[in-house]
Image (cartoon, rainbow, N blue to C red; front, top):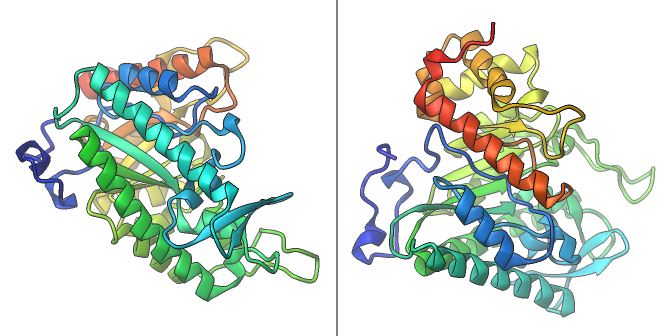
Length: 361
């Protein structure tokens, strides 16, 4: 953790500038976000106990409406409200049961993390914690306007959503920071980013298509949210392939992606991201148990080969690379979810302690 400078929360100041720490320590393990089951206290205790360097506020989508990625993101919007539809979520003119439920679930999850933090003796310890939310493009792709069209089809609605999300996330981060006495990293989840850029989202009918969003507009919307924060921001996308070229041009300090989706065409984009000073969160652990047993050494191999192929020294793994599952583990058993954390931790430890010694011949 030597990369981090002194954070002002240790002195009682709730404001921590993003420039005071890099946000994602190299050679550490973290989770993507979602977790199986519906018990927030059990989930928080597990995450805080298993992820020493970068625990996170979990999402528990099995609880239903308001608890999934989109419902959680909508709960963070300021002065914008949602309701449910047979297809998902729609903006509403006033807060109703769905908006209240989404916000209550978020409050419950923060309470559970606070309790686990206190029980672990971490209160006021200036440790690092990560919170997640759907990014503006994925939210706009999946929340409907009153007309039934995706919010993404209305440029004004998308700008309003991005500004609202930026404000809500800033408030959310401030609350978590205050309650835990911790430094916070914000993760924006953009699983729909590639579909948004490719114009691959279906409209309400075959005659009403959703236009491909120009990359310049996408960067501007992401940066509206990123630049509205006082903490470092990681953008994670489990799209296949992730739009790394675009994400490199954003103000995010780190990029997270499923390493198995990176082919020859994306290698240059990864190298350019590292050259630009970005940190990486490599998704190397499958979100569900594979058909055959797998070891941490097998999971560590692709990351080592990546930096070797790109011509970066292996110390890059210790200094600028973190490790996670490829995406959320909500669909897995609790047994595998815990195992995934252990595997990620083992890979990260190998990257941190002995990257030069890793050999796979």
